[in-house]
Image 1 (tube, rainbow, N blue to C red):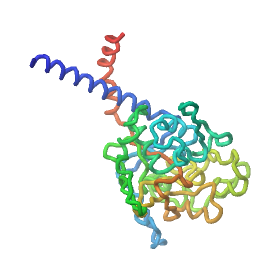
Image 2 (image 1 turned 90 degrees about the horizontal axis):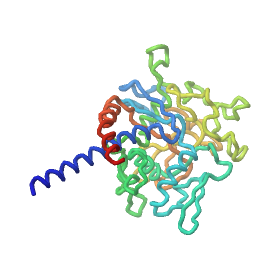
Image 3 (image 1 turned 180 degrees about the vertical axis):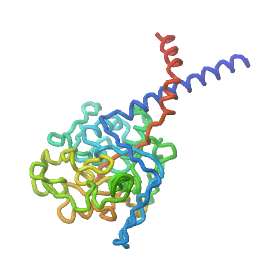
Image 4 (image 1 turned 60 degrees about the vertical axis):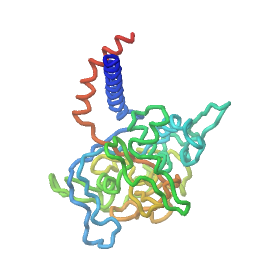
Length: 344
């Protein structure tokens, strides 16, 4: 009996080890998945933004980050978000929830078979979604895009906390879980990625830019062919058009190479305004007036209900893969090779 129990324990341990190895390998591959381009944000321990000219700025003294991390080059596009919607839709309480689909995706059901497609004309545009669904996307990425219900509910954020008291107060988890591989950026991470430059005043002379294209002047609203630098406020002028797509202003980069920090949708952060609203940053192509204020380093914010998908998109953050990730995958290869050989 003891020998059999020991053998079963060994087999269970080997199975867990195999699962861990496969998960790490899949997670490493997932980091390159969905066509997301990542940029590493360096200079850990940077000075915060603290311009004395703006003593009452909302985020004065913020923007210090003590760790390396990555940010997606643009907001998630409808094409990228569609992959998540197709994976999560069958498990969603409401598979046609507008806070899941946003304005760019439509869903149908034929004899119980869900189908999701991008609405014609929304190809290449950034996706919009609720904070809670963005959190589930991060869980899915953290769990190597496994297509099972549990993979959407924990990992980066514990969705069991996504409750409220009925008065507008929410109990949602404040920030990402320890060990999260992908997450919604904090306010400090977003500010640094958009405005902090380790060579602002010359090589090795760091500082902050006022606007997210290495400039202290507001970006020029306009179509690229007309010399514009941002599509913020273009929607009221021209309606839905190809000029609203992601990545059309390649010269307007943050110091770290991020695009479209102005325009697109306003972007989600983890920052609470109160326990019914979270801050988002940046302007949107739906803005009409004062959009440039949204792009300024020290202010310009909106407060959004985490359960709704109004004018907000996701620029995802992730950890920087380290040598340990690759070493663990390589150490698994002989075991996985033997496991596959035995199963063939």
